[in-house]
Length: 471
Image 1 (cartoon, rainbow, N blue to C red):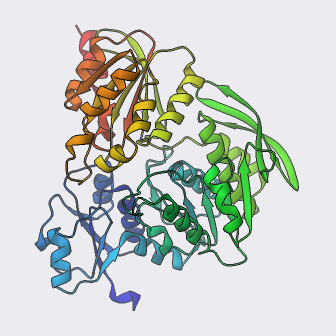
Image 2 (cartoon, rainbow, N blue to C red):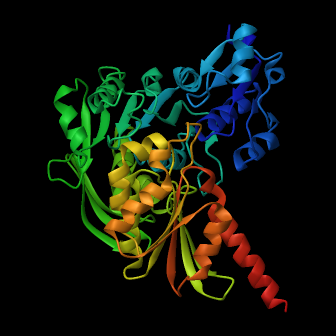
């Protein structure tokens, strides 16, 4: 039956969750094609591997395909989706396709509101260093090799499990992990946080009865659901009741060192080349998974200490020089939820101490901005300078009540510091360089069109400085 499927079309193939699956299927020998509205690093890579990419959505794109893969972000009026249904082409949700890949492997699924990508990447790196040759599908790109998906010859598949649309309930892993549970994507859960927590319980119960879930108990919502679980669990955190505990945490620049104590196992020191307590917790999750797989401690420690991180997850660029000659540093981060913004600001404080922070932030989705409006006001008031971009809709209808200027009005009531609203990315660059100070840290955050903003800043600085050097 599987041999009858040859050509697979992805609607929105450039998306983080879609491109990885497409790449794995491509390397398995399937003919892959897809559509997206614009070129990206992901579409360029897929094209270089042999995929056909259309940069528009059209009914003609799906002619002759055997399967059409869609994500939950694709609307019902998409012409390719309509044509697929009319032509009786099977339409498969992205998560079902990931579940199909996992069905032929031993799956490790990492869920949680925050930290999934970093944790999944670290687990994938550890397994690769252990000669387990895993397949992995990550929602970001490893800095070490610039890819977010790989087909391995080993029996393990590592993947992010997406709770945003309940699709993680299509996965059947042998090991599951949950980093945290936070208020997000409540539109899907009828604005009921309890339904979201129940979904995580159901996800953990997708495990076989003999398999373990690795859970971070620093998160109060995870602690709350533990009595409702009927699977073996491994707990991680800073607390003394954790099965795997981080102690003696020392921050040094953009890295952190700590002691790992494990009940029933030897303790060991580790140096993590990522900043922030949230990344310590992500690492403990990875250690818990490695312990379940009986990975040698020396290999585990070496993998962590040589982990080069993930694109746009506290990606650090130093020794930059503005067009007016001012030296500054830049941190590029995907975070777009108040909890993520707070954790990243705190990591910057630990890494850079008293240096001034300018935050350039693009809110992502009107629904998230509406639901977490007061939390955004609070966290965006914690920097020395703010440049706020308009809300990136991500396909949602514009909501006049939660636009960025409304956020800024409330922020100005709360905080007395320099803040601006930029109508576009070019204006944000102008505002940034109009009053940048020596040794400043520029923190760029968001999940929308701001994704390539940091590279644009760096290229501009390099170009202008090169021109100045050439006279």
